Length: 434
Image 1 (cartoon, one colour):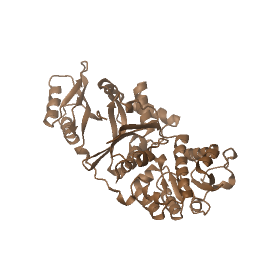
Image 2 (cartoon, rainbow, N blue to C red):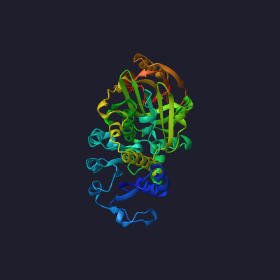
Image 3 (tube, rainbow, N blue to C red):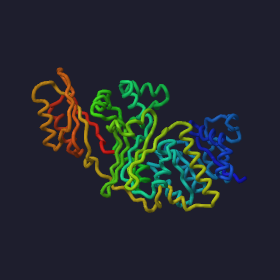
């Protein structure tokens, strides 16, 4: 039986899962492929032999540069993460005629123009299913299964750490800092969680989803990005009273030739499917013109879910390699690479949605009227309000009708500047019509 030989760069959590899955399912994978998938080498500076996994000393190397050009290796799997040396190694592998599989969403989002252009030039394929949504097959779904439809919007819960924190706050009545500390102790959150809780990881993933859904190139720097660090238990409780659940959403919409691209805490109707996605799970909700709405749900990270996506990419590439196909290298993003043009991004101040507002104000006559007056002058109309019991200082909580972001920010700045309220106003965007 023929063999397709794989070289692995990095054998941490996901890399270990890839090794386990290739070993555990070797017979099934060979039956599906009509050839053996064979692990030829693993480059990892700290890896030690583990015969129980089939990781013998002769498979392990410290020289990643040499691995990616070895003539006996067909597919290089990059799981180092980060920008370098990952980019250099991938480019070197492509130039040497290797196909590449990666889970590196940051690299593809930031340097995808270089990586995909090199793949087209070399006639080799890039598999990156594991880069968004872990084991959820959303890349392949957008590129193939939904290719006949015109996509209108994508809403994603694509960071498991943030989703775990927000859903635990809601379920247990715990504040952000306490839940984050517990998540760090359990290994669900990184020691430095900034990339996750700041929304940047979700922005990387949204940049890839925008290209696959709408056929335009988007850099993470073009995505309006806010994290969850300012979300309080108080806001989650008021959201529930209004009938909403707070989620960190990655949102992309294609309207009038422009793209909305934003990551921020969002109130979604508690009856909606996205509101029921809790813990470390991910979900991507897509609105198509012909198909309508569909949702894709599953574990967004972890050893075996992510390894499943990586090995599926290896299998797909091995099939094409055995068939001698190279033309697919130009369609890794669902479009010929030359057809993908820079996105025209709608400025955030032109975004229109409903808003949740919270002010801390003195409980005395005229304060509510002054707030409402400023909002009205800036074309912000109040849809409903939650009235609190009397106290020296009380939260004034409102839901607005749809308004432009520019008008809202101007109104809140004036309210704060005139010291109508005691602290800076809080607002959270609402997506009612998902």
